[in-house]
Length: 458
Image 1 (cartoon, rainbow, N blue to C red):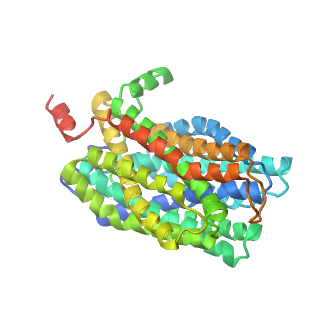
Image 2 (spheres, one colour):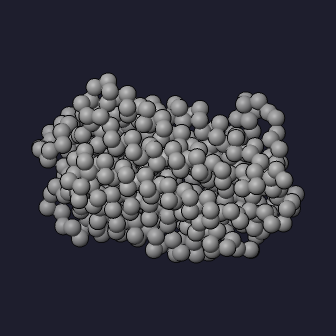
Image 3 (cartoon, rainbow, N blue to C red):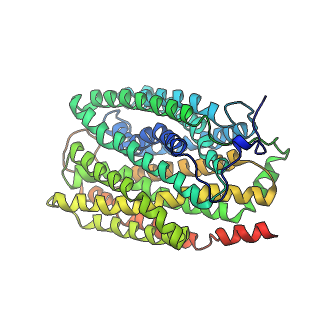
């Protein structure tokens, strides 16, 4: 036996109205911890670590992170196509989870142990670390994100399945930005603290990857021989999937907003609010704790009102709350800081849930249009856009800080007024603008149950 097919009853995707086993949903969701724990640590802490502790300039560090996405443009489609073609008793995607987990653990150890000095050795080690990170991320995340389209054909069941991923994102983020900073503090901070963080992240990544691999052994999957086509034909075919193209634009804008705020938040806490890493850790604890708690509410609202309407409303409120950071200062009460964490966590839960639950819907639509099972390819493009958005967001943050005179050092010294103003804008108006633009793009997304029903009737 070389592989399973959609015609095999034990591996057929769950039909409309049937639910996936809770154990399978939880196990699949746990896979997110493997990528999101490191992902959030990189997005929140890496830029500051590279600038303040490795001695690389903010502009150069941001530029290198952005430039590493050129490698992503090569590796992501390769992994996606390979997972589409894979024939295995373990499924098309699961073998990649193990390899990706090992590489991500190695990347965690490398990224937060970059040699100090800011010279050629520091820069070269950063570049190598980013390549290992990108390879591991692609090997795990691309096949992983293709799995929901195979696991169920129900739009609402996909929302339920993705809600486990969003909750796992929150758990992973707490490990990265709450537990992580506590470990850094206990280890004495500075470079030693970041080394302790890297070891912790490597352990988390390996444990989560193994749990996901083992727990999804009974998850439905199918196999279809790859359709021969040139890259040009594949690109044109993907471009014909309007809902997918719109979703890519929406996610690019929204994730750039999130990337900018995540990269700017450590600077906001340290340079504007005059709060340390421990207080920032509590902020993220409240933020992600709220995100976990609201998931059942958003899933229920989506069933009642439809995904797109709730998605648009949540996105606008999410951006509006970010605007309030423009009005904070060193005398801001902690209640106000943590109150924002609650509000942003609640709205951010909707943004992440619906943005990700639309992806398998567009994969199903692609199959109905073309007859081709190529979830891996679509997942690769989506993942590439995701990483590009975060790279551009981090690069934008680094460039703006560099151009406005941010002073590079690990101490809590004063910054010029121009740099402080830049931090305010990075935490408020800039993400708000990206989020509003994503709402405009979302107006052109028209895939829903009625459209699926109409296509099925034709």
